[in-house]
Length: 271
Image (cartoon, rainbow, N blue to C red; front, top):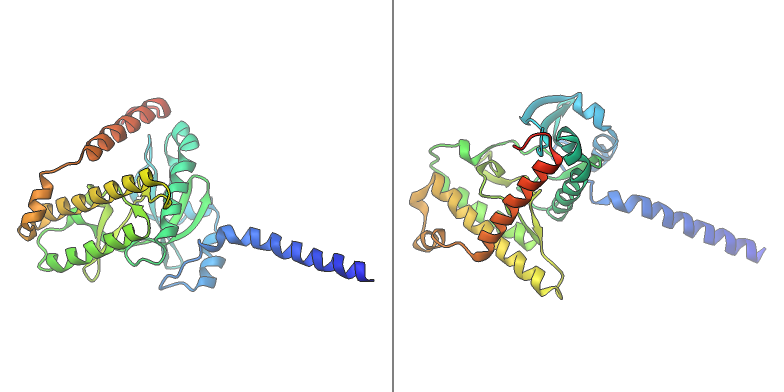
């Protein structure tokens, strides 16, 4: 009898451990959103298959092809989300690099989950797509005169500091499409596919590189400010605009080289 009890208890422990292993990979994917409860997110977004999501597209932010993913606005029963789908890129690129790009961006969004101003990750419908929170705003480059630019950029600087404090450097803030203005005049940062993560304490080189890419992010923010509100630049910011670190130059050359090589090898036509 005693041995049977022991076996029974062991069985319960094994079952609990198995359940925990199954649940843990999804724990970070459950996010709070104003129009959804956690329960609703778990019951709705996570169980909707990729094909059904694509049946509810109401807007295309970017058409996929070559090395580019589809970026689509999904609306189901009045609830919106954004689907980034690397299945729409050329077959070779999508199969080989799509899962890596999805994994990288999903990792970044999980790290930034509690930050207001970055999209929440809702789900990864398959290995080449991810579903995230819809940030209802417009790219910075689409705005003209804004009497509240000064307050906006103070908020933007705070947001960028939070992103870096959570161990993520964006690495592509030069593009005004990745910086959004959401009502009421709130900044948002999207598209973390090119990001760099801060290394562990013992990894001195990785942490140094992260610091350099974080600095590049801050310089990119200054360039964005110059583009829309040059009168707000300080003397120090003017000086920083004239400087470019060796790492920035090397990273830009290597990044362009990798993109060109992958496009030539993995897509039908060079873009």
